[in-house]
Image (tube, rainbow, N blue to C red):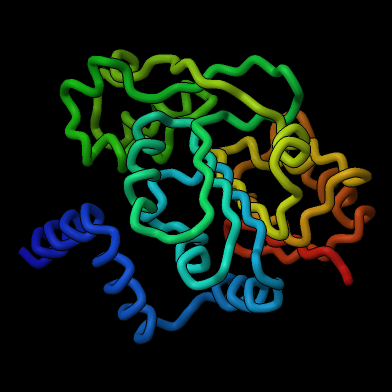
Length: 253
C-alpha cells in the first residue's frame, strides 16, 4: 500500500517539474549526501559564472539527474544532449519553465567524425503497448547496443523484447566537433550507457580542455583500455577522482 502511494506521488511530481524541484530540495535537507555529491557541490562552487555546461545523455532532465540542481542554482550557459526521441521531448518540457540559456540537441555524440552508428529505442509496436510514462522511464536505457536495450526490457518482464525495439534515425556529432561548433565547457557530463570511455578517449586535449570532466565509468570500456584513458587524462593535466559508478576529472590550476 505504501509503495503504491509513493509511486503515485512520484508520478505526480515528474509531471510537474516545478513541484518536483521544490520537494527534491526539501528532501535533501534531511538526507546525508554521498561523497560524490559533496565533491560535485564543491566543484560547482569553485567554477566562475557564467558556467559553461554540456550534458550528454540528459535523459528526461529529472530522474536521478546529477546536473539539474546546479543548472537551477547557478548562472549557466547550457547544452543538453539526448539521443532518444522520447526522452528528448520530455527533456525540453521539463526545462521549459527554467530561465537559463539552454540549448537542446537531439543528437547522438560519437567519438569519431562522420561515424555512422545505430541507436535503438522503442519500436512503433512498443509505443502502442507501453504507456508514455513507462516509455520515458525505460528509454533511459536506450542504447547504441541493441542487445543491451533488449536485455533491459527482458529483465523488466517483456518477453517479446525484440519486437519492442527498433533502430532510430538520429543525427550524430563528434565530441571535438561539438566543442568546436559550440564552446569548450567548464564542465561536461556524459552518461551514454557504455560509450563514455571511448568519448573521453577521443578528446583532442591539445585543442580542447574542459575544466571538469564527469563521466559514467561503471561499464567496462570497449576497444580501449581504462589504463590508457587514465594515462591520457593525467598527461593532459587532470586529477582523477573515482567514485562507485562515475569518475570526475579536474584540470590542475
